[in-house]
Length: 121
Length: 164
Image 1 (cartoon, each protein chain N blue to C red):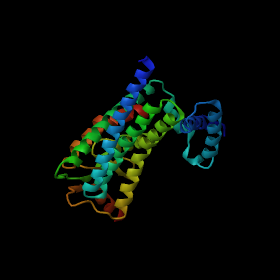
Image 2 (cartoon, each protein chain N blue to C red):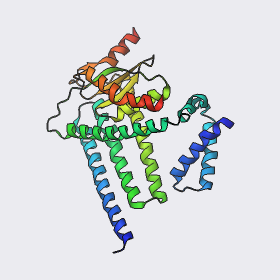
Image 3 (cartoon, rainbow over the protein chains, first blue to last red):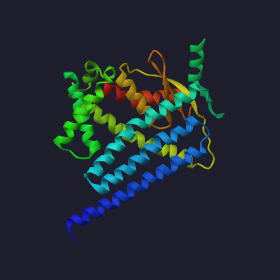
Image 4 (tube, one colour):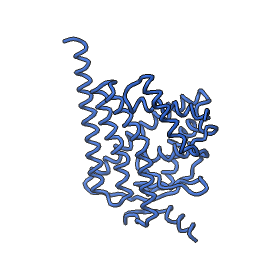
């Protein structure tokens, strides 16, 4: 077996492992979306786990395709996800709070609500 | 128009990534597209404030260190949330707490807010009007002081070094 084919075999194996890790995190994120009680807690899973899951899939594409146009596009998509997911989560929580979506009943503290009350007065 | 050319060059590099080929043709095409894109959003680009980011050379090291901390924290965050999700009975006490921040510039505040969202158990909800307090939704808010301390010591230090 030549060195090139051994290298590509190892890269394919690594790509499969990264894909599996990414998909596991996406699965856990969706599980959290179903199980957690309110919009704020659900965003915890989708904003973080979704990012790393999708980033893992993109990394796996990069490993499989190398620095071909598809691989480079994959890494660009991954970086954009990493940059925009926190902003989307921030805007969704803010909009939800402004529209009066309450925190779940397990919540212990809401200093943002108090600050909004103070502003209105 | 001349001062937007460095920004448009960044757009050119981004276009190379999006297009997938690194050639002079795609770079120049991206640069022209960048100029067209910057034109309507001129008020967002203030070269005099944005370009301080690149001037000190030792800042590169702090930016690299910041990204290493960020990657470590993202992995930690995922394991924390995965543990909470897979537990048979979900037992959490979430809440929104106020976290005072020391960052002053827009870039620093954006950096710390995004970092907070990507790190374990916290999401930035909003910033106070005087830009001194971030409101952070925390999945375990039973001890607000400890959350504030961990944000101040573990994250804000690196953001201050890298972006201010």
